[in-house]
Length: 153
Image 1: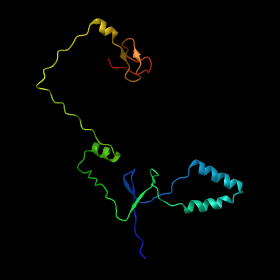
Image 2: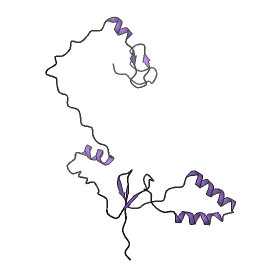
Image 3: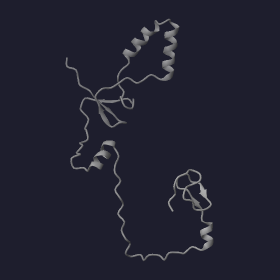
Image 4: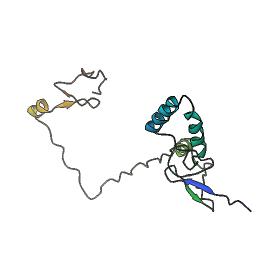
């Protein structure tokens, strides 16, 4: 009798898994087994060994979610890193997509609006906030008195 080969796939990690693992015990299960082993003067350890060996290995080793099985292999995404810059290779390995900078198009149809000048009262009433800690400052400081971070002038 031929044994069918099953392929395992993790939906969370989005990858094919070669070796599945058992789901780790919850804290309550560990506590119950510990009490049973101590209560039976060590004889419960034998039952615990049988319990561990009979549990199926159907979970992902990375995220411990239940695996999906199939007779056919799952499609693996092709990774072509030859045409990438070193920065793109690192971001691709980390699984981070690089954000493309937005192109700024000068508006040809709209004339620029004249800039409004602020009065002295508006300058005094304008509240300055620290961009790091968010505290409102009474006046301009070189260093924030709350978080001790140098501020740009």
